[in-house]
Image (cartoon, rainbow, N blue to C red):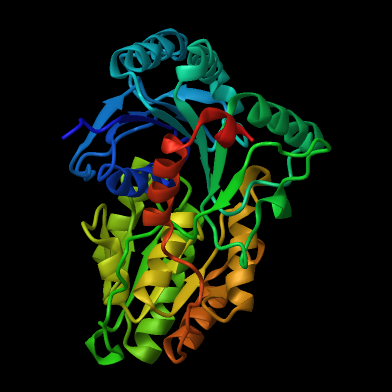
Length: 393
């Protein structure tokens, strides 16, 4: 039997864990067809599950601070040293693994600050000539759409996509969100765009309402920017605990700042029915077992909500011009799948109102395509088998 081809998968998460979680989900399905090497550019939390057949190469970890400046997440590496080392490691993996496919998450639609390593990678791939690997972009359903230089950003991204990429995979149901909803270059994309459906775990969790705990589960991804939501939940807890008998569990996340974690522990010590934890091994399962889930509206958290089929309240993250979560939340609110509280209006009273309403309601059924995990792997395998001229269009 012929040895499976290799797929080199670049992922950089900057603030939270969403990009890494989605990439690992994809990698698990891709590993059934490819030897997958995942280049991880951000922090890799202890306890993160790596799918069988996937080798993770952890680059010196970089990310963004609150002002979107590059920072090192390892004291052994300065930003400058990491910027020198990371391209060397990436090009070494390209040369030694000889991949059939190079899959790049988000770029060129984002991650401009990481071009110091991505452009050398892409140039090296294209220097290989006709036998070079296929180059594929993996991108979520909704892009950030309120940059100061949005028109110039979109035009530049289109040029890079047309120059370097053979296909773009949009992990969305096109009935919910299409690439052109949040991407408006003057130059048309020449590279083929494929809609995969949403990337999530394959099976829903089947629980009856009677099997759920009388609990509100509060989470904010990695927790780095979750403090406003955690504080509102602590204030709202008194009402839903007194009036509906609901307890509260706050999942702080691995990246919650230590002062926030210390404050949450203090709240847990003084509030009856309130607990704080750093980590839960099965967040989706814990969501399904809760009366209501409260969270931000990142891609992966949203997929967990859809699979758990649980009453949900979301407060989208919207700092620094980020509008992706707000758009997703408002669209799902319009479909009756969850309830959205505007971050500008977030306080204990509004959050309590939304949770109390959600606790006595049934979410609308989900009719969106949630098969993106397996569909993505199939599309990439088909692209690998196609002649280069056919793929490139």
